[in-house]
Length: 228
Image 1: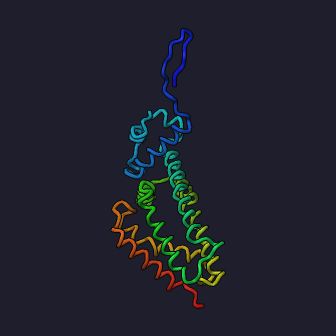
Image 2 (image 1 turned 135 degrees about the vertical axis):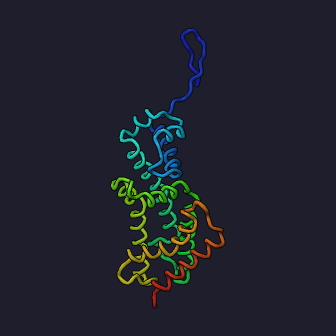
Image 3 (image 1 turned 90 degrees about the vertical axis):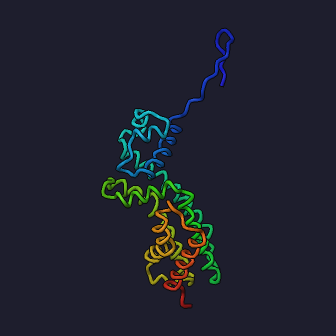
């Protein structure tokens, strides 16, 4: 950007970041640091270095310090992953457009593989989640609650609605408990992959991940497939 002074000379000025831009840069850097170092070991100094900001700037944006910043990071990161999960759910398992019975296994499998793939697409987020489970006793309860509500519970409610819709159309039998069917579906398609890959930190070979998701979907349908 150039400006002209009273005597006609020009000077170059650097565009200034808005307050929102600075806050976003801090949250993004903090996501990487928390995902790498965990909540307990991460420091405001390290986050400031990664964000290219001063510690004073961080406290100006997040007066509550590390706890407030971590809550903001989890909210931001969980919402991004949640939105992608819900987009894929509606793409592959839309309650308003239920699949033909012959296509249900295929659609569940495509959805499962897409969700498992998010561990690679959002590596920093799932590194954060890994640390949350490891350090739950050191993280303020209200932060854990905010994370659950922003991400896992919101997704769980949508999947439960989808399971109920499939049950209503006779495609599966949730035995009167679509929420429990949701828990089992999520566990069967991802738990072994999550544990063996350390939340995506060391991804499994694609062929092995595909085998495990397929086995999970088949196990789910054996338990919840419609007898009709």
